[in-house]
Image (cartoon, rainbow, N blue to C red; front, side):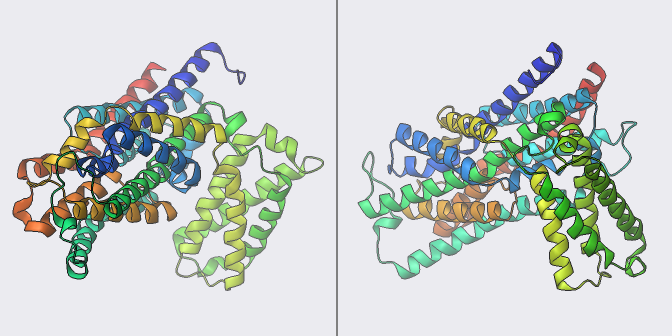
Length: 467
């Protein structure tokens, strides 16, 4: 299969199984947050809630695009993404997957709503940092611009969850006269129909957007595996017509011709020349072939992928240079040309989306009770009211949806848990929180990044030695 020797084929299957395992664990670890409110307000029976959440996650993965997936992929340095040693790629993938799974399972066992997003990103950072000590490393260990952007989204999103839930609770008290909203649910009795509808709708939103955000992280992992181990098949999108690549390169070349190197800051002057060289190199590679360059794309997928990534990275640096004085039309042409090129590298086959969707959906349906109990019973000192459940989930769904649209990975766990905490504070102040649970969640939040960085970095070094 794919022309791989038996040993590599076994490693490929092992990596794909591990990626599905991560997403399966993500399902019962993170999605439990989405069903906690409908279960504890009696809006849905537990079995119905988890099956419905699993289905919504499935749909969310398919309709969520791949911006978040590529954000995960491009956390790693370009050299590691285009490393032609297949065993190095296997070491990378196994290290980050196993470290993420180990930490997720550990926090699930303890019933802590820890973040799968933090875990995965910490694992990727650990691999990148470990790679910086390898002989073939020549650049930055991590794409720090991407890491900073993702880090800010992970920090800010729980604050949004906490603050906006308090605001929404205030508005509900101010502008509604329904006392039922703010009462604890009666045992084993469903809420009034309209409240039940709102709670189910918010649960649906959180589950769907969890799939469109967290599910895409699994898609990114699988693409890392496929590109690293079978670049001849997956380094470029085989469904794209290679002839359009020539047009994009011509647009980029014309736009770059209008950039005055003397106006750039000193670090970006060689970047401009490097991008021009990469464009010329790619044009020459395609021009050597008769016809539309299909044969060149088929034969030199990894080299072409490398050129596209270097062109995109260099162009971003040039456009970010405050000294660049390009007309708006040239800027649009340059961005359009690079965007068209990235369609060859930023993609995911339908079968990958299906595999991750199924893994996430099935994971949602098992193992959810530990986290649900923490979210529903242990964050606050009172039972969840209808208003609290709906407010926390509405804010969580909105925050995750906006983040997905911007291509930013956020933590469903942190957003919703902080929303529940915010609803408790809105009801009776800070004294309504259970200090021990809050401390445990905060400790897991603080430890996730350093532990996953250390674990994945150590595993990467071990696997590099082993292979």
